[in-house]
Image 1 (cartoon, one colour):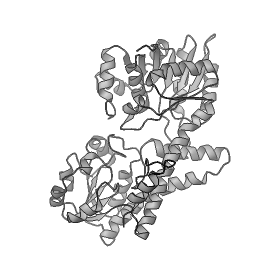
Image 2 (image 1 turned 180 degrees about the vertical axis):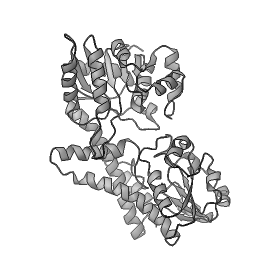
Image 3 (image 1 turned 90 degrees about the vertical axis):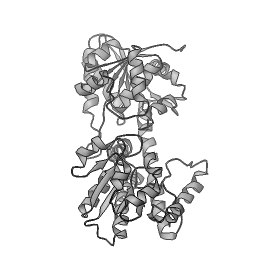
Image 4 (image 1 turned 120 degrees about the vertical axis):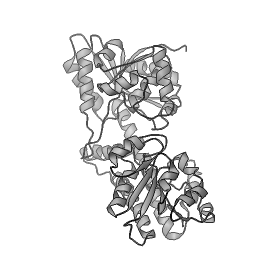
Length: 436
């Protein structure tokens, strides 16, 4: 490759750790990935992926075969084998919006206790501002004599469903450090990805991730508010968004009106951003509204379904198409589908659900709801079809076959995947978001 091969340890084999580890191995580094979850490591050693992510399985297998990627449950094995250590453990949200840092702290203690020589520790997990300083203090307080640590912030900007692609085609590499030498070492490791790099202080790097996700969430909540106005004035949100997106300052991405954002990152990071602001005595009004609008959007969708049945869903069977928070992932964390199904059940409806990959995970979260991996089975005998996740299998469904399977030809399109005129020509009663 012409690039220097480094010995890299990755602590955490979740979305970020596993994808980052496999991609770092693919560009020529020797990577040891450690995770205390014995079942997860056992499945990885058998070549089975704990998550569904396009292209990941092939990447992991080929690099394991080449001897560039290995897995262990022992953090000390990764620490001893590596000069650079990427911390990619989970940072879930606490109920108050703050971030649960227990896995980060435990990873740092593991590094300090195992390290026999100086290391650069790279924070890949999404962490609050000030974590780099906290990490350095913690590592130094636990370090063996003569061992020093540099902590570098290197946030990730991966999208679930396209995380492997995003790693090889990233928009930017952000590195925040107090030492220029440590920053350069991390940039050298990431150089093979060929992305433009931004070097800054740690606090700015830590905030860039939250600012980016908060801004994307704001675009989504904004276009959903516009969609609600469109419905009242007879405008078409698809055309409004298209016209807005043609402005280079705004751009077309994240302007798809629907039932709001879900998943692990945007809900967690918007709440954390609000918490960060509150901690420094600042009232971040826009962020508060973004979060509120996103929750209301799910309720509005259910309200439309109820209105179409004159307010009475008792005894109605509804086919919910798509469960994961977005297509091409099996992630159900904060998925709009779960809130929507919960509301429908409370109003007395029966639900039949379809998802091509997350059915096994969903079964545990939706007891009593039949889940199918065939879309037409879910539709069979249902009173309406509700599009909740814009899977290709839903977008390209055979509409004639769907109409035959349904008891009533009603479609509630929460993701605006179908063309309104086409649906009406095919004889459907079609209710979308932000369409007259």
